[in-house]
Length: 126
Image 1 (cartoon, one colour):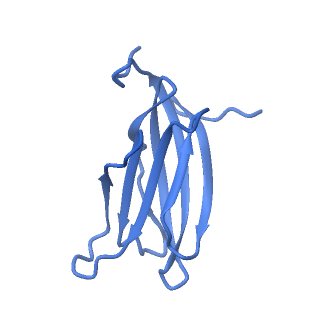
Image 2 (cartoon, rainbow, N blue to C red):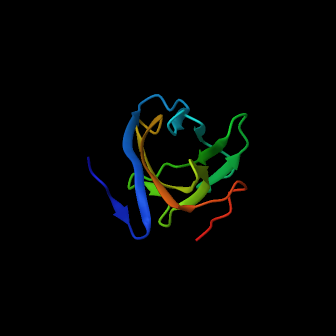
């Protein structure tokens, strides 16, 4: 067993996925897979800006759309973003996306982190 902390956050899960075709990725988290994260990778030929958009999904969780993530050095967030709560604690995500296969596919690196305890509405409590 190993326990990793980054500052005040506990590392819950980390990994790297090679997605050579650029298909959408789904990651289910929690002891009963209660929290679902859906990731889409798209290109916008008109607006070349690299950006990430959140979208609603049908289950408890989050959908994130990565648009124009085509920098060969990788694109991602520096500060973990809070995306919800899982098993009574805040859950955060750090990610990095690297294009491969003539920008058709991606390497998706992720770290899920757990923060403070939350109440039934997802508000952090001390």
